[in-house]
Image 1 (cartoon, chains in turn brown, blue):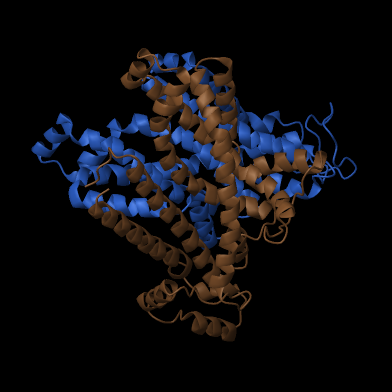
Image 2 (cartoon, rainbow over the protein chains, first blue to last red; image 1 turned 90 degrees about the horizontal axis):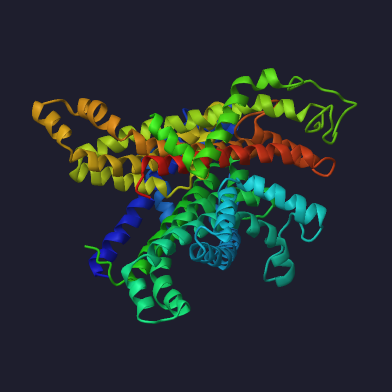
Length: 315
Length: 274
């Protein structure tokens, strides 16, 4: 990995964040013909409208508004919530922590299930196990989170009464109780990921198993197990890093829905509440933080990929 | 075309996809005339019924027949999802082909910006646009269309890049044709096939996204029988009748599975090498 690649890739992250900030700001604050009316509704008194225009600086030129907002964001100040009057940044970052807990657990569960499923399907290509995995993954990628959540709640919480359906207990307060409350949301968001990644692992491994070097390893007398674990998997699993990183986009979308359904106070739920109550600074902060999370994860994944795979030479 | 259809029907995914999507189209076209009751016909004394001969899928909290609501709702769910996908596809195809045609720095600048926009998750992007346009089916369609545009741009551009090297494009440049003519008349028709595959798979995703927006209360509004909205409304009554929430959920999943299968089948049929 050359230093120039690192610099280039980093510049791309900065550019991405700049474009996203411009877009988020434009959609929320510039494009509405009159943001103040949009925030307060048609029946707001002129005084209230003037007050909010003054508070958000809506009377000033667009570029000055954007510049001030961006300057605040860079220093970690996302303004104050219109709904609660509290600073937005600490609330959002705390919520982000809860969402990341959910996301990390979902990715861990996905890796535990998707890798073995994909490997078994590839090794038993065309057999019953392959067919089963492929049916399950078709169904899995076709279920929106709210459907999965509904079915899971119906069976595990409502019918079998195994796990609590809603609520949140911090892991630091009670590890066991916290995990029990996170179990259903984690299961829900990981379904699409498991379905998608197991399919990718299968197709990558099938390709690798047909390469000459795998055949050579078998022909020189190595056992199937050694060939699979020492030779084939290493190369087959590399692209999985990129796929998982790209899937973080779906994951963040899924987190929004799942947090809403399971009443989990993460960043997705804050964002939905902000949209429903038209809390402009919170909407901007939530959207920007989510997009930033995604692009930073992808940046790290690209670095990891280049670091692990020595064949890759980026200019 | 006949050859393509034959190849499509030979793969199990293709066959199953054609069957499911065919069934969905029949429901979209004739659903209302197949429905045994009206979608809003209430029967206060027949609420929360389990499936029976009278109400094949049961009734909801107002005693409305769930099967009839699903049959009517197919239009608002499936047609709007297709419309949104088409919107995103057309916009993405135009930008992607233009970017590939321009090449060089312009291409680099456009694609880096598209990549940047792609870092906003689709659902989040759609939420922001709905927030701008107000809650309604129309803004959900616009939102999904706009949210799909960067992804479709990416797909189209990679295909169009190969097309720019073709002789007929060079011939058109040599003839002195205008850029707009080359993009629209020479390049676009030759990138259609891979785009159709991508579009079919995205219809599945669009149905899911549209239903999700309605589920969150930001897409179709009551008393519409859009399927995502039906699930959202049924959640409060889950304990009284699980059927109310089960059927529309399965309907959304079935549509998504159908289009996913059809898309994969089409990809194999158009690309015989795999």
